[in-house]
Length: 333
Length: 278
Image 1 (cartoon, chains in turn blue, brown):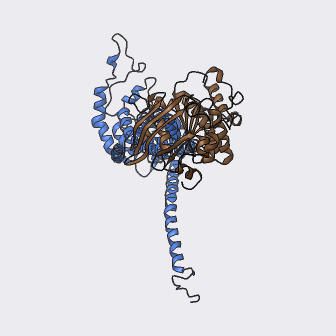
Image 2: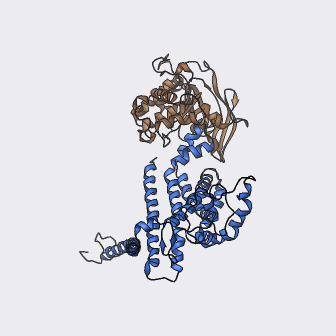
Image 3: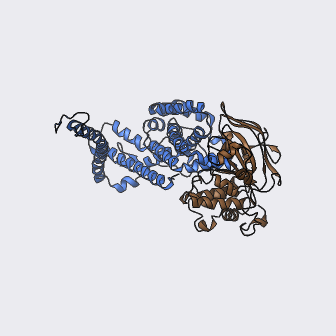
């Protein structure tokens, strides 16, 4: 047997076929990885091109400081009411989802029996799989009437004789058909599984030796969970929070349906009114433009890309923040 | 820890001396822990078989024996760390200060505040050195001067000089031996009566291990120390009494350390100690 290319099993000769096959596999999977980057870069380029052309017609100063958004009728392109609408939903859904999601994660990781966990975890995944349009529908049809019935924060609770000045009394008017509160509630419910699932992974990854150490010092289960396990899993919990908040910021369908399409600057000082009334998020405004007749050209159409860039900048900032926090708190055990 | 104890103990020691360890009569001191007919099972498997022994206050008691002989299980029964293992079942009594720790009205959380434990692998919390030592005090609602107690505990654990300038840095940044001394400081800060040690030096290099051994000798001034070890020289060096467990969870011999290592009653113990098996 000499230098024949078709070498047998026992030969040390490199097989040209195997080498070519390996090279092909390597290139195929590399192409898949590159594809994701190409798509991302493509989206950014497409967005920024149109957005820049929008900002060359409408001054960015006017865009970022304007307090009225009415692209179709009044040609007002002030983004602040939309940012405010997005922030209201994000903040209040976070108020609901972050504590509940973390508590659920603590229960799943520290308290639940194997059997309870085997039922609850898949249930949470199902909650995550419900199409968001159904959440929007739920908000409109069930959540709003229910909140209105059980939480009558109306002017009636003011003692008689006290003048009711809507802007200066901290009372919640009864809910409108479209309102930010029920939108926040359903978005909050929507992102609970994200918080609890990722946080639970982080909590479960905390080594058992730390729990043992805690119990050995006379900790209760609650002490161990809240003073040892949760702080040790900070990086993962923060990551889950940021991902959930990013999701809330980008959420579209449910908020469009539940909160309506009335861009609104925040009410001060009675912040509760913001929850009771309709508003519009950045995403809902984009849906509205995409559904309008002005497709293809003009600042109204291009405003959609400016909004997209704005949204993208916000979520990108969130993700970078998350990464920084994650690095800051990561512990090697 | 009373007020008079706040200075480091090392200088004021009334040393029993190395030659003194392990030679006093068995019942010279008060019994603090007493096991009676203790059986422990993991599911169907029996880990401890009818063990009865008395452990004296301020003694260093070593538990030795081959792997799987039940010595760690016995140790963890004393402060009910085995409660967290679902399949673990305990029969018989372990009395601590005259009270069976497995009685229904005993709160394991309160028990563990009196019987601390140090584990095989150093397990500092991912918190600062100060917070590690202060943890036990805080959960127990200690209302005294926490910083003073932290300093005192670190001094007692012979770690203070090495870490006094970096109390705010993470406990995880310390070396393995320092981490283990931090865990000892953490265990003694709430002032327990008994300290259990589960092979505390087996994950450490010889120099770090010998520091821990010196420390155990000092700790016995104030605490009752029960230590599980694989290292027979270590047991011989640091303990007053030695209990030899052999396979099947049986306590074969329990006596003064010197007696166990020089003239054991049981042939099986002699075989184990001289390395003929195990």
